[in-house]
Length: 435
Image (cartoon, rainbow, N blue to C red):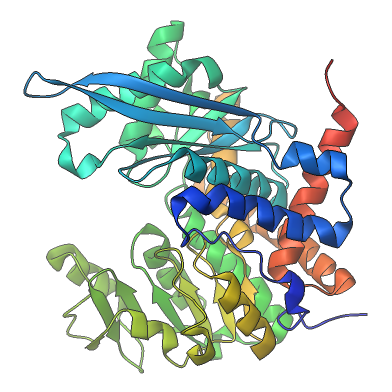
């Protein structure tokens, strides 16, 4: 019997990436989320024990020569959660608050994200405790090259493939690829994704996450009988993901009435001129002060009346405090962990459909997979081919998650995790335990 995807029992809805919690608690949260979804499918204890641990963890302390000639020692991590589905895959972040617990949790969540999308990857994550904004370009390069050398024993195009994450970018990936290649004596473009196109990066990679969010919304709207040309949208966060999602949802006919960034928001009930807004942001560094709309408080944009809400900024933005005031019909999580478990309960009770992060923002890792395939084949695809294949993968994942949600009468978040855990558990059963 079909069930309303937004109003399925909330007892199993409280599965969220929840990175709003203190970083030292993140892995415990990830394991608790795993067990909630595992209960839905009655996962056997042996498989639970395997999947609730990270397979491999590397902590490195490495020196970097600074521009003034001094030497600083930095701490970095690379964690691989599960290699059952294939090589592990996951970003590298540079942030002063990176911890091993955070990296463990992100690696586990990456396993589920890849599995939801049916990609042949397990999950991994890496990070260095550093504020790169305090370093020069040369110092960031020195740090990247030394960190790469330290984690080289456990990365590789058929082992573990890093990618950009918080405070890293295509240039950092280029340095990583070059360092790895110099150490092995030949060019290895497949060792990382998110590279510059000239070095084997993929067309469409920059827009992939935002594009995937809109693909998810399009399928959900059709499922709910909503005509996107008659909808309004609000986007929190106007960085790479949010700005792309805003532009693409507008191309689908939805009127984008508000966007926000870290400094504040801008609102126009008649719809924002996004091209002009982008130029304003380039000139001023923020959407605040845009002449084509009213400047408003950033958090308040979440509570505006709209059909589609795209939180694409920070974690923990939708909470028990503001969830009762959210007026959207669809929430598409462009960010990781924007919704707390308490907010999830409220949205379920109120009939608001949440498209969970491990599905909605998986366009980035999906096109990273495409980039990896192109690198291994030395055969680049056109942007049209990339976008068409991304659309196909997102659509198949949506149909699969929806079927689980209706069959098991659970919300979309739980359904996505059930799909992921069942897939990884099957790999574990089939491969067995060595020796």
